[in-house]
View (tube, protein in one colour):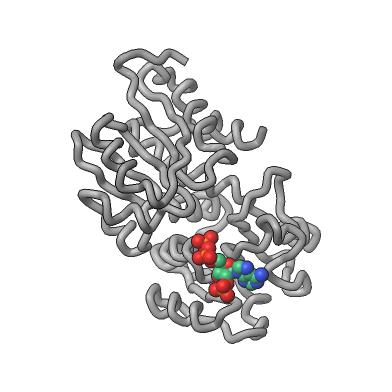
Length: 273
Ligand code: ATR
């Protein structure tokens, strides 16, 4: 690392933040492109109650870029000078770029969904089941409808699925109406199931999974694959691990922060470690 007075600072903020892999991922990219004299990326533990002061700090210190993670993606929006139209539609910002003192918010989470999927399937006219209807589901719903695939939302609380389906143009699945899930092309889990303390649960009974499915779990665990993905793999389904979303939302951020194409393989290597 070659930090000098000219080095620009980028960072990820969240609460908690200690588990974040983003600093290693972005710094590996800077190193690979030999721009680690120009950029450095750190993590900062910022509480929601300190967001207003944090943004003042970004302006005062001319921080170049900020990645936002839980719980800041919605709350941060009101402190920014501009929010791009995609982030507005999703209702969340995961990326802030400071261009000559003007702070603009973007959302690259949907790119983290689309990029790994499009490596294995063309999404247009395919049927995608979205499990969950919370904050994370919104970027997925945007990605699916943007790519002109058919969106079916299944959520524990049916009303929330209905609301999200109405907003993005999809269908909400009635509780236990599983037949359509069996026939879908892709299943994407955005529920908290798979995350601690729900790591031993799965969001769907394994009887619904078939070898024709592509199953993407955006939950990522330090050990690798979630129980849901292990069951899907056993059934012969193609699986996509959650770190692929982390990687591709991050590579899109990398470009927004630096203007360079991200060295994807060097950044993936960090996550595989
Ligand atoms: P995030 O921002 O990570 O999406 P969230 O907005 O709290 O977090 O949404 C969590 C999602 O996981 C919701 O869809 C939630 O279902 P409800 O809308 O019914 O609350 C879902 N979820 C969490 N725990 C669940 C469980 N044990 N069973 C089924 N769904 C669960």
